[in-house]
Image 1 (cartoon, chains in turn red, brown):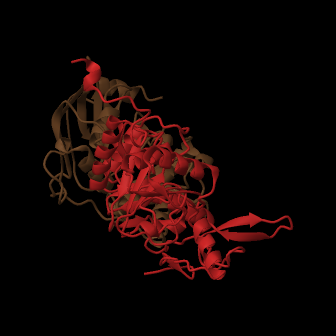
Image 2: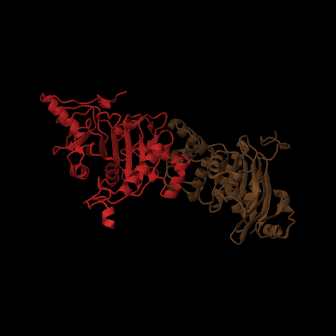
Image 3: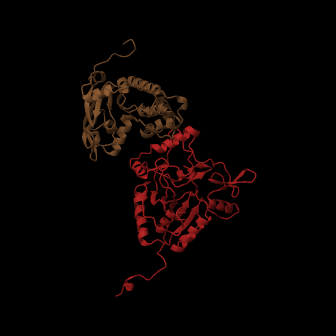
Length: 304
Length: 266
């Protein structure tokens, strides 16, 4: 018997690109992250064939979770057709044989940067967010070993102090993306750079959300039916971006998160940020039989 | 009531608020404290004097639970505080410190977030205690700054833009925001010019009279101790060489070092 008889025949790469040990590492840390919602779990981040900062954390999680039976959707800033989203989607299809889709309702794995889709995700779907900076305390505590102690002590007074300062200076909270949020009443997480508009979508959601930072090597999760509460003062209500009254110039959709398109004459047009939702609305207007699922927001107001 | 409108002195019969016994600490081979004990009664001001390196600041850090000693015990006679505070873990120490102990450092950079607003510095204390209403935070921060005689039109200016005396007032407001049982002052007026020093001491004195806070004031300036303190402890080489009422110790020093200290005053 020779060694080559015992080994499997050579193949170009492992299923889902990552080797078995890398996937096992991520699976183990995922279990931990889901068990302690919002707590940042360090993991051994591996190289994937995109640059750090381009979604390596999200890609490693997707590569680990993907099976041939999955349907994958990739979003970049709400759009499915940007170069980064298209490349990641093609890569995932190539290494896993999974189907790809642009439709939120059909996807089982959704890897996203900056947005949560407008259509309500259901149980069984997994949202994977790419996170550039997983540490919500970094702006107030540059020393990471002390920041970790602050997480352990649930000592988040400094984050409220940031809100206080902004209220004093400008009369309102000026945090835009990555609004610090308390998960399950215990850990404050930064929900990746999603806009304030999207944070309430994670609260008591039916789907699983996994947040992964490849460069910073941290993974955290919001399991289904878990409280996600943005930090706010009791007497100053949480406000999302004022996009409720904007209308998409292409699809005519109203009451969703919009991208602003500045025009040469100084005005601005808006288009719906969730590109496939816009596309579906246009196709439906043209008489096609397209199903748009229930959305989180209705007429610009968060649906109960 | 006396002519000044002050209550006449009364006999204190309450048990001591704060009891430290045999606190010992050395840094490597260097002994900083060699069995120092102190008791502070409610509403009393204890002064600690001594030369640099005598261990007075280390002792104050022990009282603020920033460090743990090699040996010794620390009791705080307040409801809900357990036996020896030195046995508490980091989290409980921080909680206790936030609720019952206020501190003013010599260097404002140590106690303040220099780039946050002054009112924010005070509000941080309240946020740690769990206050989550913006209007109440604002009101209480204003109240504490007012009590420490800080000009309220500058309450949102960052401490880095303020003068030394005003920075000390922000520190003081922060320290008293949660109405602590004990206020620790580490050389609070060193580095201020004489007139500002007098004004800050005046504020401290008034606060002490109005609120009856127990204070521990560490200073190498005998004048400050004479004005502020009821009792004084003289420290040298990590031990207490003399202890007694301020007038008694300064008028009639017994220990050779205290005699030297009193006479060395310029």
